[in-house]
Length: 468
Image (cartoon, rainbow, N blue to C red):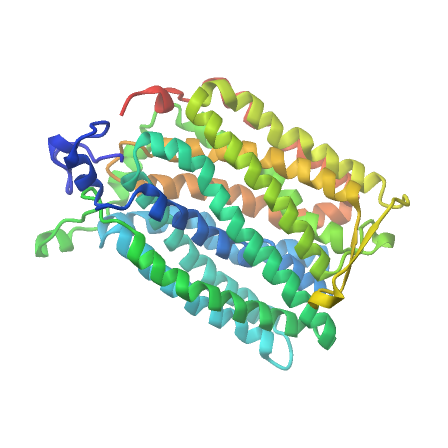
């Protein structure tokens, strides 16, 4: 647990200071008899369930409805609120508890999914209606993610933060496999049988809401009530303005802030090109430089790719805890970027004839899938590397907020920088692809993250090495 400074609201008693193995420690974390394993996986799972709806699913949906790659790239602007998380952070820190925002934000997400389903069931698909619904979902998702991340810093010890920074993406990506791959593949088969892609998206949304509901009630039960997760009481406290100025003043005094933000901004820049246009690459016809996969096949491929990213995240989290940030950051940053060469090779060889394994799943209502082992293996390697690097970036983002009076706001500011990078590079990804082709785009994905390497020596490693 990262406790607020002395004198701040909700400061735990001295007997429960971080690092002491005493009964008061458990009481300060508000867990009762529950361990971190009861609730920590919920943090990543919520984000993983909803992430595909904002990131990968719109690409598949718009591609299946015949929209161009440029339109698919520009559609990323609908998720602009994800880059403005810092606006919501002070509100969450100043009002209610982070736990309250976590629980109620999950309920609001389900309502947003219902709104998102409306343009998919209308007689004529409305792109603007769909993008407006995505924007609403992005706002609620931002609020929920900030609350979850702030709760992460208050309810876990430093050692647990290191461990779950690696394991958190495991739960998140497992949920992503389910919502962005398994459900997508099933809904794709149903849509293909009816000959209408809108049936695919109606089935997909209904199934996702059915999964959300029981998980919401479990989260409501599982999340603890740490003593540090408190807000001031009384009319005077409620009348205090949101602490935007205090948040920014404290944030701007962080050591090595500029190198840290540069690392967060550029680390995922190249991966964003792959995340946004990689699916389009798999779905485009051979004549357009793609691999002509169906929606159900894309769902299966992305599921296996995400599984490799889970393995990378788990390995990274364990090594982070054992070796520390300074000893692994060079290796894992390289592992996140260099394997982009796999996409370059695949783009150069898309016209070559390779052995394809045919998997007949008609008896399971799964249709017939065509599996290219080379394609699958190379994409798996690239995602394994991404899992290694993403965990390091994620961990550094949380450590920058450690010890602050405004952990949710600090994490929100850091997350806004990361998402600003995603928004910029995903928006231009379609235009870059149409200008450079898939091969040129994938080469560019290895060039744009280069600044991340230059700032690694200037990062503040004391954030990781100090005792708490």
